[in-house]
Length: 374
Ligand SMILES: [Zn+2]
Image (cartoon, rainbow, N blue to C red):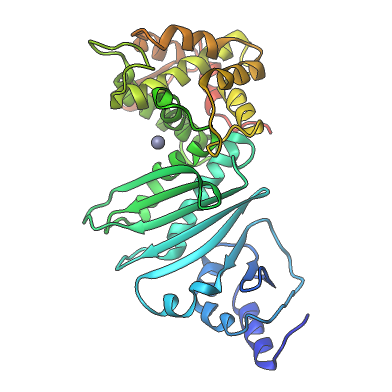
């Protein structure tokens, strides 16, 4: 342990005594890295002591205590003034596997604590990591700001290859968004799913939004954050929006909201079921989407659509994605959703969502939302 003052040592000890075990190291020239079991307690303890710690930036202290793979890095350049004045601005770092996610939080007059927001981002990070088997990119940023709307809305936008990051999600919260709103939110996961596929031409925007719309509830379910019943409830209530309406010319040529988000999601659902049917439920869309990430075809790259679909097909040993695209790209193909729901064994009855384990595709339905074994 190397410390440059007795006072510094005392402060570090203070942190150590009042909070769960942490390791403090110098990260870059001007940063302290605090590693430990990150949770509400440690975050609160760190929040209270950031200013004190920052006074000892030159300290390099490794306390040699247990470390898990979650890290919180406190960045001094935004330190004193930012911590003391409003708005509260924090720059924190999450790690997921070998990836680092910078989280910049700016809160004004909110009941929300920085830790609430960080927990929300971390939860979405976990869902996406569970679905893809890894966080899709190595280096991402999430910025969270409050807007002027006096409501509980949560909006997000994600860009690829921006400001030196492979992906940047900007989340905007209405002024009265509460911790409960963040706990129920799907938007953050939706935005992070966008990292997992290349930027496509405008005419193929439906696939970017379709994958995000389809994968988001499934990823949260696989990670234990959402019940399977809720996943299917959301699919049943939204999917009909994706059907072609009058004047439709196929997914590549019809850029309405319904066709872009739910039409794209319907493409994913039908593909998932067809892949699982063709492979005796051994492979699914998830395998195709994981292969796309493994090839580095993520949001920071630009790609044509066909190579991506071929890559996905190769991973499942089928031609489902390419074939489906050929049929759907320039023609209004209607899906018999009522029949599909029946076969999957999902329906909304008087008591709520009912899942029928005797339905012909019940095993496929169950595999879609089950946590993958790897
Ligand atoms: Zn989106």
